[in-house]
Length: 118
Length: 106
Image (cartoon, chains in turn cyan, red):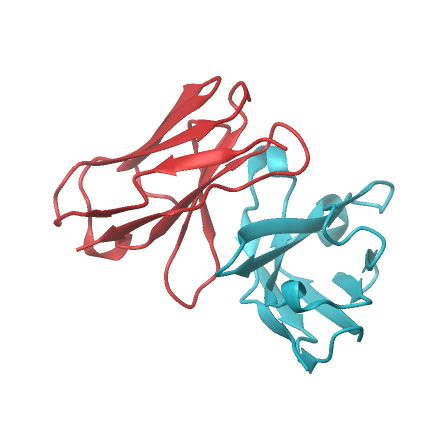
């Protein structure tokens, strides 16, 4: 069974940092592009970052470029998102999702909530 | 960025109804269109990829069609478990933008 479990979400002040993790199992992690997708009532669904199988290529949305860093540890089947200089508008549920956009995000985690507020 | 517009934003239907949801792209995306559904408090789930390909495990009452800028998700006979919010996503180019969603209510 494919499983993706996010962790690391929290309440943080503007300008602060968080590191999200996504622990996976049930599929060959190193064979898949992985993504971070966030959802808020204000902005809906947004892919904020993606990384190819071996980390050779990354994508960042304009809204997070220069502040967020995606990484992965294929030996531990885990995806990460380092989030720096957090803003109020980064408040959202953050999901880890499996697969390249061409074939759709075929599996998602349950999400981890990030709240940026003073 | 490619803008994705879904219609309607919400609809009311009954079990057994045929339901159609439309998604329009701001420019041609050939067949690079995915559909998801989401229940409250849950993560989205993939229904259809590349406009018309049913994701493994998804019931055959779901179907997708379209190309270019206009796409359709059809549920041939609505079931109780299908009441949810449906989203389209273009996968033609980055950023892979989502539509605003269509809420299917009883």
